[in-house]
Image (cartoon, rainbow, N blue to C red; front, side):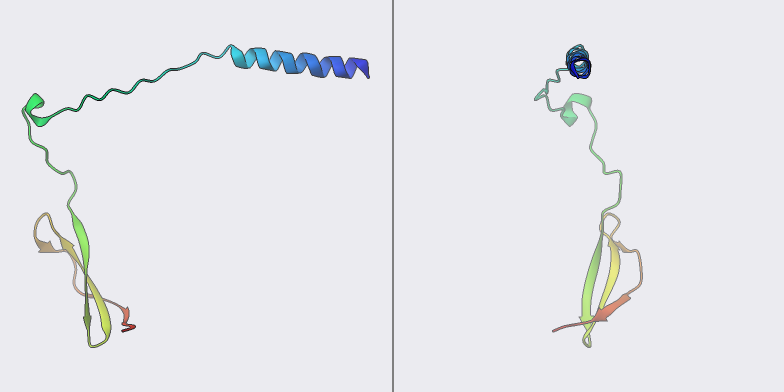
Length: 85
């Protein structure tokens, strides 16, 4: 019984000492904000801005995908379901 207790105590102490040997990493954040004037360029979006437009006609709900970046429709009107109003 004393041997099991000694082994458990030694294991516990060794595991604590191994955990304390791991290096601590410190990360600092900066408040530097890059401006377009600094790099002499303009900011351009990489993806088109798309949104669904909904309409209710004769108690039925329809949706259509609109590309706001190019001002064009991306799809035809799609039936969604019946209106609850």
